[in-house]
Length: 325
Image (tube, rainbow, N blue to C red; front, side, top):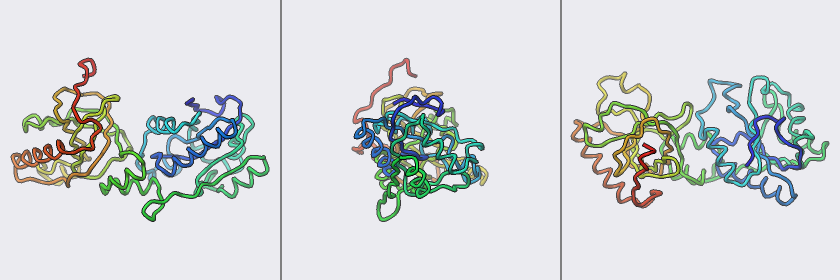
């Protein structure tokens, strides 16, 4: 898949275009992108996906900008896997946000882009203050000989699938429902950093993950997960929370959430490595124990549960090459 970051980079050609923010690339997004790929093949055209970076709300209303489900590099990879030929990432700036709807359409239907068919979700709005909608887009397309399709919103469990719904389910720890909506496990990405090194004294080493800024992850609790170092998955337990057993005052409890992963049968340093965590199952709530010994007892129970779990990406642990550590 070829990736462009300005319209000027795009070579002439005929295209079927799908456009949207596509945060999460959930099953609703997948349908829009998949239909664009299919329609392009039927026309002998190229399929182009147009998205924006950063998230439009980060520019229009920063205080209302939601945590991101998929960082740009991850979104790019997911879109590529769906078979798209091209991806155009439009920088969403203050100037771009002020484009009136007709000027937005001028860009979308420009001769250089060569759009023969444009596909969007039925709730798609664009232009200054969201002044353009799918009816406006259809009318504009009709005048310019471009077919416009507004895909109906996809539902699951009787409710519309949306990135907002996914965020709320993640916070609640509802991984089964999120996985169905995404068609993959929910993930977070981050760097392994130095922590309190308390796990060593407890006999249970953990990797402290600093999640990418503005990216969402599940709410407080203990989870079974796959931790990816490059392309290699490792079964692990992940605790998300505030380490309540070791909190001495309210200020400790109020500190930012920690993500700590205990990788099964793994004893090497990963400091500085960027990793991905795929959350597979919520095991239990985060708990405050009366003593470190009680905490260790529970962790050992959790590890036993993890060893019986059949859903990890690998059934047998691998050791990464020493050059990676």
